Length: 119
Image 1 (cartoon, rainbow, N blue to C red):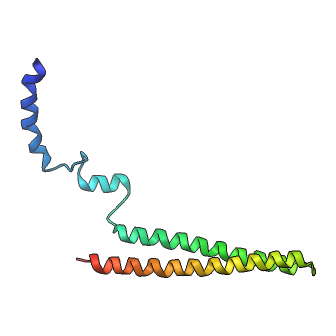
Image 2: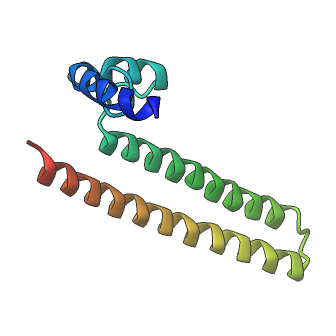
């Protein structure tokens, strides 16, 4: 019964603090420093993540091509090993072409997104 009497008093006290607090219960600057997010644009963050992932995949594709070349050099004329090496090199080149196409598409989409949403 006492809670029903005290509840309106708490409800009247809350709007006074609502101006200084954000919906999460802290000041906006405190949330940025506590989470470490800063004021970086989410589009820039997405572009950075995509660039890092595609760069990593590009490195993997080049390593596959080098592995195929090494396998070909150490095949010593064995046709089976040469065939495997050719398949590795072909797969690496196809992968590299796909990665470069994905990079071009992602760059185009992100550039268009930035140009459309700029204020």
